[in-house]
Structures are given as C-alpha cells and as structure tokens.
Image (cartoon, rainbow, N blue to C red; front, side):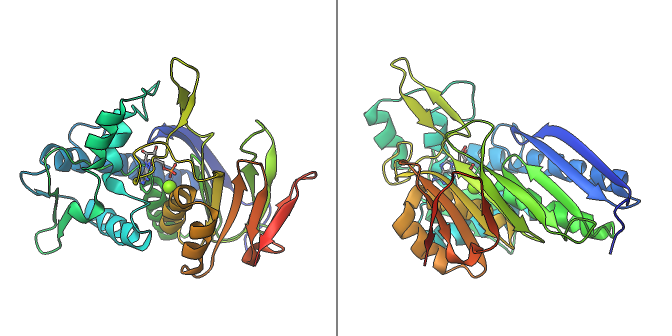
Length: 323
Ligand code: AMP
Ligand code: MG
C-alpha cells in the first residue's frame, strides 16, 4: 500500500470539448500525466467529428460512397459502439450526428429546427448502417448524408485507455475526471475508497451525495450539462431521442452509472437517460456489477439496490431503492 505522503501530481486541461482533471500518485506521476494527456489528444484527433482529418470526419465525408481505413483504436471504439447500440435497442446511437448537427449541439447556441428537417434527418439514423470490416480495418456508413457522433462514448473509451497507461507506469492509485466521466484506479493512497460527488441536477454547487468507489467509473448524463434556449426561451438539452429526433423527454433529468467498465458506464448513462426509468432499469439488469442513481423531473431520486452502503446522500436528500 502507498504511504499517505506519497508523491502525487495533478493536472487540469481542456480536451474533447470539456474540462478534464487528473490526480495520480507515485514517483512517475508527472510523466504519467504527460502520457495520459498525449493519449487523450491523440484519441480526440481520431474520434472528433469537429476535427477535419479525424477518422470520424473521414468516415462522415465518405458516407454512402466508400469505407476508409482507420486506426485500430477507432476500429475498436466503433465495434463496441455498434455492439452496445444493439444491446441498448438503438437508444444509444452513434449515427445520431445528423440530428446533433441540425440542433447545433456542441456549438455555442443550439438552433430549433423545423419538424420537416427533423424527420428528414431522422430517416438517416440507423446504427446498423455502420459498416465495419475487421480484415481490412475499414469503416463506413451505408447512406449519403449519414454521419457519426461519438460524444456519448468517446470519453468512456478515453478513460479506459488512460487506465491502461496508468497501469504501465506502475501507478496503483489515481483519479481522472473527464468532464463528468470519472474513472478511479485502486483506492486512495491511505487505502480508503474514493468518494465521488454526484452533482444535484437542479441546484448549482450542491451535491446529491457521493458514492464510495475503488477501481470503478462513475459517469453522469444530465440535461443540465449542455443546454441552450431558442428565441422563445424554451430550453433544449443535448441528448436526442433517436425515435423522435427531439431532445429526450423520458421523465429523467440525470442518470449516473457506476461500473467496473468506463465505456459501458458512459454508454449506459446516455442510454438510460433516453429510455427512462422503467425500460432503463430493465436494461441495467442485463449488465453485471453495474449500478445507477437517477433523478426524475419531480426531483425524486432512485438508487439501484446494489449501491446500498456505497451511496451516501446529502442531508435533505430522500431516495427510493429500486429492488
Ligand atoms: P453523454 O454526455 O455521454 O450522455 O453524451 C451526450 C452526447 O452524445 C451529446 O452531446 C451528443 O453529441 C451525443 N448524443 C446525443 N444523443 C445521443 C444518443 N441518443 N445516442 C448517442 N449519442 C448521442
Ligand atoms: Mg455517455
């Protein structure tokens, strides 16, 4: 076990359209942080649809025409994206990009498109049209106009990759927050678990509570994370329902997933947010060792039963355990 006064290093930076911060313990902490940041920026260069020559941009530009050869990491994230989209019945859907772009999500202010435009873009959303050939390591999209957005999975994948780097450096205690995607490695140097705060979706600078974790990821998707309003003042958030083309109205305002697997946690937080509590909890049951904390539009909090003892609510927060 590491000693309490073990050397540590921290870093905060902007990447993947969000603020990231990391803390690692060990004598090689600074070198490890350098390698982690290099990895994140390399992944952003492959997976961002905003970077002109990224693998994802090349796939999007070639949609309906040809497949392109991609980096092995891109191929891996796309393969997992397609598998997870299928497990999530398409509610998590990386072919959502035409709609994300139409609503101008990810830019300074969203736009409120016409229903005709929404229906036209909706017809392009289908994760089954993502073509993957493992022999040639090529990827493509079946129809002209289709495009990929890895915003709901990319940070989870990056979290998995940086854990590999931390392990290579022989570091046994670390914490990374990739903009709402928290990944922990081991426990704190004194052997106690990490306590990860969960933001209250409706009260700024207030926590719903915290979860005690070791070697787990804690990932939140919420309507308060990215939003904008149109000229009439109506608020829109950033997660699109692939069955309607509109920002999701599933009755949930935030979903936190706690899991051993960072990428699964990232995907499930988005998928459950879209699916709502009943279908979402049914889906969660099919993932072992994966738990959830949900808040609905009436500010009721629900906690999956495996989190008993692990979730510590803030005072005044009442919650229901989902059996
Ligand atoms: P997250 O914050 O992980 O829940 O991911 C939300 C981001 O993923 C959005 O900002 C969009 O870029 C993209 N996105 C929106 N709706 C969906 C969806 N239904 N499935 C997959 N990605 C989505
Ligand atoms: Mg996600």
